[in-house]
Amino acid sequence: MYKFFLYTILTILYLGLAKALSPSETGVQYLQNNKGFSKIVKGHQSTMILVDTHATGFLIKTYYQKYRLISGYDTVEEIIVRTSREFAKKNLKFIGLSIYRKSPEKEEFLPLPPGSLYVGNREYGEWRENKKGEIRWRFNKVFKNFPKYLGWGKFRPDEEFFQELRSRASLNEPFFGVQGEFGPQGKITQENFPHFFNEERMKKVDMKTLLIEYFKENF
Amino acid sequence: MAEIFDRLVIRILLAAFVCLMLYLYRYAHVIFYPSVKRQVLKRINPAENPADSLHLFARLIGISLVFSSITFNESSGFFLSIFHFAVWGTIAIVLYLLSLFIVESIVFYNFDYKDEILKRKNMSYAFISFCHAIVIAYLTRTVMIEAENSLIILLVLWLYMLVIVGFSVKYYIFISKLSFNRLMLQKNLSLCFSYGGFALGAGFIIASCFDQEHYDITVYCIQVLLKTILSLLIFPLFKKGLVYIFPIKLGEDRGHQGHIDADMQSLGYGFYEGSVFIAGAILTTMIVNRIQFGTIYPFF
Image (cartoon, rainbow over all chains, first blue to last red; front, side, top):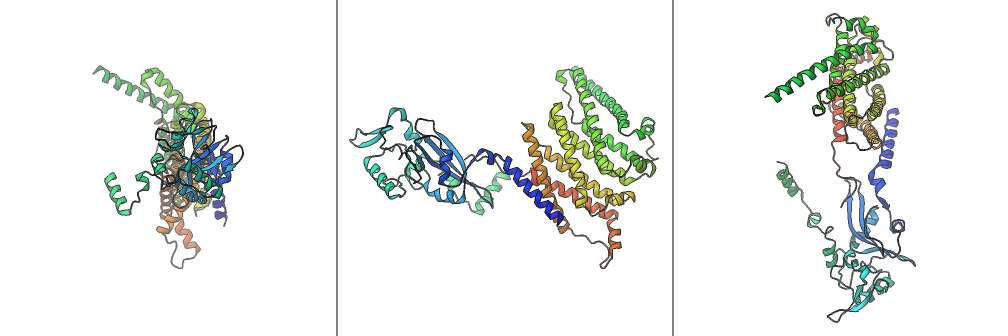
């Protein structure tokens, strides 16, 4: 009994010390759910785009998410957070979407295509007719790199997209684009966030292939 | 040819200098063991007292191990490299003998060198002392290498190492069935092999905890502490596992306590416990140091 007690004390001591000093504990913020975003995002007119998600561990998994934080006039940064299992699983289907938006008036947590905070805001751009005669959203010169940061590629929203976006937002429904261009199934997201969709990561390896590759590499 | 010959001469001179340092060590040894003055300073007769020979020559092996951590840098000049060896060799001698003195004061607090070695010729005492000499030398060598010629870091690490060793030698009473003081009085060899295995095992574990890259002394010390605690958690698992996989029988089938005690005091039981301790310790170092979890910080 005495030895068992001593062993338990040692285990607790080890776990406590290791947790307090681990770089993964001190360097990465923990995001349990949507409410944690406001602590991470300091600037105004900010949007958090879920770029990647990753799980480590064998029996007890630790979930990480990578976000691209775009804040109005500030620089763009990529943030890695540790998160809860539920939150990670829930957001898996919203890769490439804006999960969080913060404006001086309100905070929004509805998954919408990236840039939905800025589209329609005259401070950031305007609706302009292109050479084909289509009316598309165009960012002001100061924000000319925003389409790249937002992962739009060549996509520029039109008025139909904007109307649909507003309508879905009022219904509190996630929106993946008029043609479903955004999200894990969306072409634009797949093209602009290639790391998550990397073939190597998506590949499900069976035991036989794994063993063959192991022997090829090691012997 | 001239250059090669010159290098050979340098090596011979340095070897002679190391011998000179060992000669100094012989006298330094007397500081901590004044009672051996007569034996050490005169010609030694190994046949007269094997326990004393083992006790003394274990220290010779030990100091050789410690000296092996010092490097000669010939590019900075012959005399400077000799001076470097003299300074660090002296530090090594002092730290090594002081460590031995402290550890033996903890372990043999009920026993006296003069009584056990000189009068009673206790081989059990001598063998345990031999193991201490080797283990402490190995650990001093490790901290000297880790200190990378910084005296402050060396002192910090040496003190830290001593604290860990001091606690670890007390751990023996928790994991062995043998009564240290009683069997030591009986000059029991089972005890010396069991304790020897334990001391060598503990030495392996502590040395492996110290053997890691360091950029910041505080972080390094914390990492060493964490690894030491982790080893304390892993080692009992291996010990239990080894005892379960290789079960032993003590006494006759319906043997009473007396038979069991007699069997435990046999040489075989000492070998058994000692081997389990060493094997468990080596496997513990593997679990603590040889598992690569990849980068802790998630880069993806």
